Image (cartoon, rainbow, N blue to C red; front, top):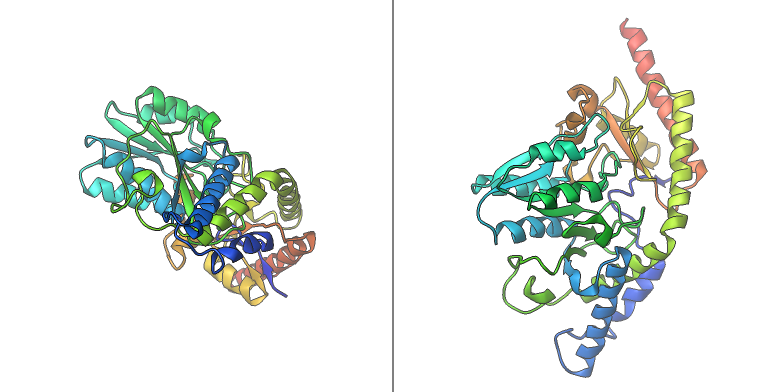
Length: 382
């Protein structure tokens, strides 16, 4: 038995995406910047993919800057604003992905002031809290649209209204949200938005930063006019074609995907509550992604649960895949007020399109075994 329940870490590439990419490895391998026929074919494919990615989030194709992934897009958002602004303050939520918190702290080491925006017990950033955090010299605000660990969805439109009224640029990491819910760049009010292909059944190694054309960003890479002069270098054409195909499919299918994923999440949480009431679901009262459940397993380290489930043929994570191997408690749960010890005793379950109700039942059975082991060891110790 092999059951994969870690789709927030990555997804398997869709066969339809793979087929769309295939010609651009050999048959159409031209450089999109070349003027000959082979180059023009490549340019047409690049332009189509740009339109497909823009369509997923209701942006204009000219606003799509391709990157190597969500991490680069997040780094670019901060560097692009900070590199072209007088030194000031950045305000980022306390529950951001490490690919946003890391560069924010690096800018703080270079003289920027960094403010962490608190969240409530459900992991939400309230508009009034953001307003209280902002200072007259706050240049940039970044709040993740949907958290990669808990799945909590933020009211980005309200938050961007607060940020922009204060004169700050608003960025949002939409990597986990895209393809699982409606994402609208225009309606959100943000000026920068990060995306990634491999979270929506596309290839690894490609992402995008959606950029409001009114922004004056410092280029990330110099040496050519690629990507509106903001990111020099020959584009990863097969990956970008795959991103475009995945984005188009996600846009066409997200309602059906959401329905399927939510049915699995509901089944899992209903059975948890009935059969394993000692397990605690983080942010249960908040709006969340339809596929994500972070569960605290009192009395046993999350990494141990993960390994035991892996031996049973079930793949989950103990939080963000980008901090795998860390013994530190989840910064997301700590920010939400979870005790540090309980924040170590968690697993994240993230369902995907290939999962079935039988997978949910197998996970419940495996967790019942884990819970029984804890109870027996406690009784023995007593």
